Length: 433
Image (cartoon, rainbow, N blue to C red; front, top):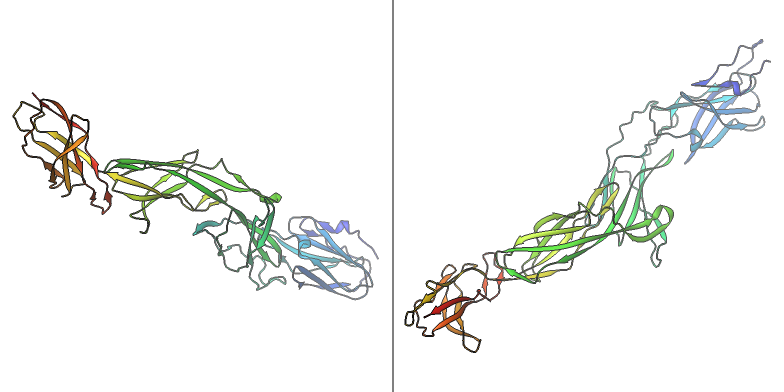
């Protein structure tokens, strides 16, 4: 019987047909079947008229056939191979067949089948209250060999694999597999520190990594003045320091500073009216390339502040944890709009009239003071503000020379319901000739 070498059988797009033999011979191989033997392994079986050694090939469309196994003449008419031997692919259009060859015939082929497994996928990452969240679109790849022998109804499972610092070590990593899901969305609970996260998709064809992300922790420095003038601008400054795992892929989970990606992170300014009141948002800012930020607001009265680095997906596979600064308090003093005498240069015996206008506008008390010969401020009279203004009215002041005056302003409450401390106007002069 004429024989062909196995090498001659392997051709692009499949094996060549066996040549016509001189004598008729019964087909030795037929009914090549495929089935899952167990998770991750495929059983290839066939019918054969007599015990013959067989070579088993994988034929992939457009590629050279590849031998994946050999059986003996006395062995069973089957071959169990790992799924990896059938070369799973991320190309949904790629199809394959199994060719079982024997020396006496042209052999036989299985039905076509695909080995598709979804590969790296665009994932929408987010972070909410410290929990990393993901979602991705459904796989739209078409099944090019519907109902092939290796199709299954088992849904793909996605397992989040978390790499983080092992407790009690300086830099040793530990990898934790979180509960798998068949959904195309999920989350990882908030962790105590930075970590790396891989989404691993598992099917009958094995595992593929869909996406990865790394989280960073941060500290927020925050500086404010202790007090400011009511209604005037107050400038608050600070900076952000980011930290990440050094190289979790290489087993180094030590914490290192990330000094490259410091810019463009959103900061929020919160305030509260007392140490027991609820926080509320006031404004937003962004960090510069050095991680610095600034808030400028009008002082509404005494309250507490904090700066917050907002948790966010900053792109490039990175999530930032939220970080909150220390609490700072800024007091407020009255804003002096006007203070002086209606006539600051008078003759002896003439009665001066002092005026004052301050904010917040209200009906609290003010007191006119002058600096006596001992250099001490001495009170002259109290008045009550009307819509933020008051005047002394004419009063006797028979001291020749130039003298300094000021108004003391009592503590008050702003229109926002916030305290404004007592304070003084700037000094102003009266000359008596």
